[in-house]
Image (cartoon, rainbow, N blue to C red; front, side, top):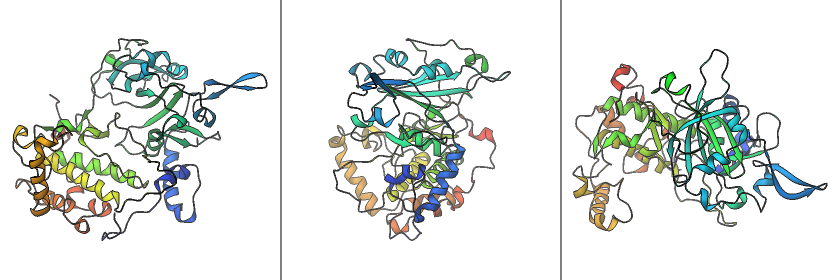
Length: 433
């Protein structure tokens, strides 16, 4: 937390050094953090970047045109590399390029039989292994596929340097995949299988949750090679569906399970000195028993902003803000609306989570009134909640930073100490409308 916080701050390490740790470059003061990286890397997939196809880059070598891998430094810094064609800007408009230019090695390993969602720039395909082990069901995966932007064509690229565990040249792959490789042991994140970078497109292959399907429904589904691609139901739903029109749909025990698992994921990242800066209900998923996973549509990567040679530092510890956001999410789950927000109808008092820039003028007075309440009134808490729950809400949302618990203290609160574990699984079963 911030320097004036009553608890000891977590290990410090500049975020720009994260990938140096993965590659084994560390100083004496960074050894503790490096040991965590090393241990977690061994638990993840051994061979991550799997597309070995070589793309001609126009240079001549001994009279022949030179060809290199898409994940190589040469390709990533080549002026004539991937052109971000307008025709592939929107997956919703045209999904054909995703099939036409998918890595052939990916198609050799997997059978695509549907999709779980088509966004503006990506498609989440459903797939299964093409050659399962004898007498075994095929394993199922999701493939997040999107247009590839090499380092040279992106001012703030989502590509980072990765050293494979076997001896190989450094690979340039999605930062999201690099981080996922380091959280393979945490059940709050989908397990990474591999990545494929192939000229215009990149794909991340992850384990799939197929608990809502029978083997007959998906093990022998027809392979899809072009449009139309059937839309499959999802076994996971976004957290925003746990609240309906400012009314919570979970009881306290159910909300405790979701909040505890969110905290588990936050802690697992914090052990890597990574603090999640985009916490929201749409960025996590839950299954029918309210087990939480990260939303595949929400990028998980290190954001760096370039300002020439000038190093800019925030005047505060950003992790304080992130824990405040987490406290707001927990309050939302229990009340249906944000802290200090009026519980009335959205049409009358607005919804701070939904108000966009075009509506700010309409609700400006109400927003200013809420700001005044945050500064001057005690946190309103539902009187039906248990005392353990009230204690943790008031601690997380205390007005003064010095009065809020650090992450290590937060997990020691009784409400986060397995408050929900002794309840029957049936109490958490959830039917989506």
